[in-house]
Image 1 (tube, rainbow, N blue to C red):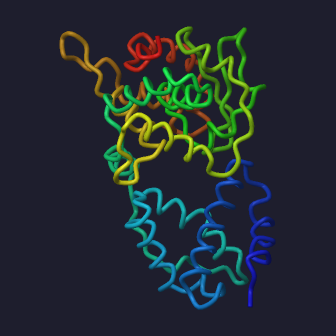
Image 2 (spheres, helix red, strand yellow; image 1 turned 135 degrees about the vertical axis):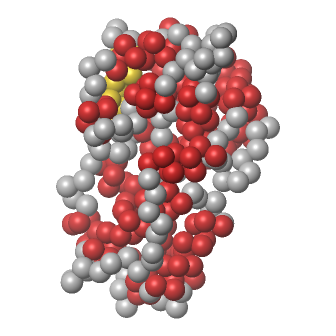
Length: 288
């Protein structure tokens, strides 16, 4: 019978040229799937079975409350690698709905925290005196960072003299630079960035949400902050009821892929766009 160790030995060979953040994601997703198979199937060899994989998709959708774009990403990416590394390569035996970028954003943005809920999360972190809570909420409520991007931040990535910090992107494996306004500078530059193992960041966020009395119903996690900030920025209006920013402005601010990933992350006007966004960023005021 095949063992998890044997499967991972082949997996490591397949993912060796991927960015480190992508490798970690694939290891985590594959490990989760194999552990689930070990508990819910007759043997680990059944990971390739269509019925087993369909049951796992149902588990992700109905028990973990993951969105269809996230499920597509897991199956086409990490779990898909298990099938592609077979000889001869196999296709993932599950039909996944194709989704346009606009459909993906629409689905993801439905599962978000409201502006009031994010303000409550910020207030709880800010008044807690807990530096880890403050840093996590500053990064997520201002910059819309993914959980893995926050986890991978290190002390050498922050540059107080330049008033910027670098993010190792989860998608594309590139570096992106962000401007840090004075109001949140203490929460970014004075933090020590100790290593965070595995999914610890999700447990930390749960602590913040529970302390704030903010419901995580429907599978809302730290990524729901990311999408809440996006939605709030995109819908921000001035005194004349005109939209202040276009969706493209917000995409650029979050370094979300607009054309190609490289085009978006390395756009020469990114830091200037940051400063423009910060003039009206709705969550900055709650860090004063």
